[in-house]
Image (tube, rainbow, N blue to C red; front, side):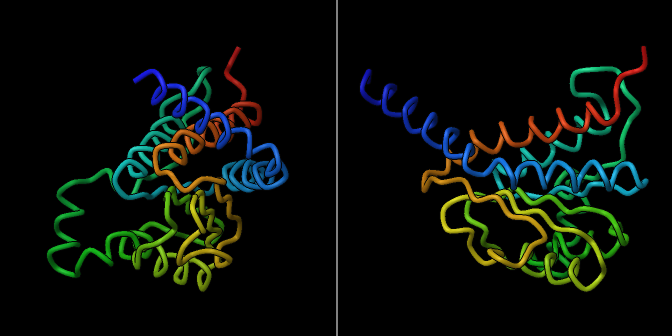
Length: 190
């Protein structure tokens, strides 16, 4: 058991340390999101499974608060409405979950942030295609090989790991860095 714990800590540290090489990409992602919010646009977030929890986490921090008591910022998590998800999945199929909502809520200048450990999923690929045709910026925060959406988004950050747990741990840090950048651009009221 001790070796399992030691290995998990080391693999997590390795995945997080690999982000040092991607600091320019992280900065570009932060700037894209801050600029969109400063221009009055919204942030849409999406993910499957555990990555859906990251998407929800990011949106709630933008609308609610992260560290300080700043103004609420517009964000919609595309996995947060259970009845809507089952309606779309039943009527149009699972692959329509994100594209259908993006068509309803996404406007030119908005940003779609996708958390995905694999980068795979037809609903991600179709969402990216729709966004690219409609001037919606796309950010893929992924892992493994980057999957189906690799090289198709405005910005992509692929965590250097093949293990889902380690990728998700790095995703949490990336999300928190984005939120810290937002807090600097939208400081709390004194």
